[in-house]
Length: 483
Image (tube, rainbow, N blue to C red):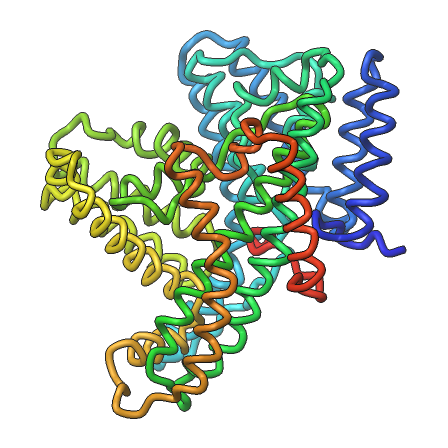
């Protein structure tokens, strides 16, 4: 049995780690030691990726716990402000050093070489702790809310460590606010009811189905397409197929992680925030960001966009704030020019839609089903174009777009048919379930509570056979583990 790098879709997690953690938790639930157990289990879960990764995690926890208490104890003044700014600066410096130092020094060397300067900058390569972008935002929300007087610090370090390191959401979110999650962690939680347990199991099963059957197979298609968008090998239409396949992969992969995380948290009577709401049915860029990675978009809104001024200082500054927020949102995802361009691209879409009044045009015609359908179709295509920037390597960007707009005089129809059938096979269940959720203004997974026992049985049997017949046989990590 291999406990190295536990992931939600591993046998060790599903059949050993999770049952043991839940069983002991239930045994200790009414004792003062319950959060010691949850913290220990979370630290063990994280340490399977590497013991060295515990250093920045525990340093972050201890530092911000202490600074939060000091900020709360001080009266408004310079020292209080300096403490808060220092906390944020340390957290972002740690994140930047781990995530961007190698990329920055590598590109700096490339620039000096291109300029013909005889300067060599040592390339700095540091470890990238899994989930550091997520838990950095967890801790910043804690000190920021205390500084703004919206939250009072907690007096037990073990509860705070459990909040930051809580294993269901530690590595890939959802991004938790201290004001939402810490009170749940600190409270004495009652035992879960059978309906809660049933919902938790359903969330876990549905998430595993999306990951193993849909996301990993979409990822396989992405791998098949990638050789056709190389500088020396461009196939007509391959860029578009690449975008569609990756759109399916990243959504199913990331939303699957969130479903499993929410389900696992429910087993401890803890509610995690929703992270998705049928994003590919969005009708505008603003609507897309109300539906995609909701915990990130709302965090950026509350802790970056609004402090920058939001919409309070005129139109030009509003547009500037949108652009800066989305640029930094792209950079948050990782060190790479593609992430930066992706963030700037979405910022530009938000600006164009706002300047041109496209949101207002649609909202003035709420009864126009055709107009809404066209808006959704256009936004999906725009989102898919963005995924090319997000996923393709720098060398694949130009060939991807060349394959979309050119080379149509020579088409490899056998390749197009092969990929097309694969996309159709895995897109149909995704589209159907997303549409059912969209009609109810919910996610498909949330419809479970209204089903009869017969419908539930049919769905469980269907996903069981889908996993057996179509599930990827090779275990793969969740995409957002790298962020």
